[in-house]
Image 1 (cartoon, rainbow, N blue to C red):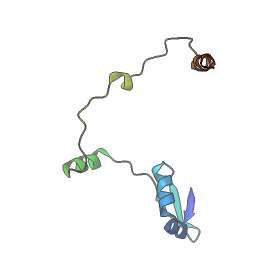
Image 2 (image 1 turned 90 degrees about the vertical axis):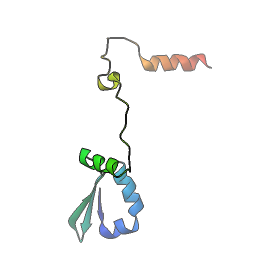
Image 3 (image 1 turned 135 degrees about the vertical axis):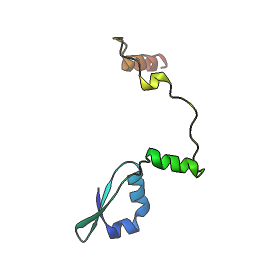
Length: 92
């Protein structure tokens, strides 16, 4: 997305919401790009700093193995659309 400095100033909340949803914004001043506004992605170093300052707490839970290595398709021929259609038809 592209916008002018004056537009950013008058609609800052709108543009911050756009950035928060992942859309970078190129800011122009007199038809010349001067800055890019993009979503902040914390690094391990910044997270460590936040933990030290007491702003966040480090999690203690481990990630379940099935989230790291999801099950492989076993060739099952079940079609979710067919199941949902049948279930809806039964309720009428």
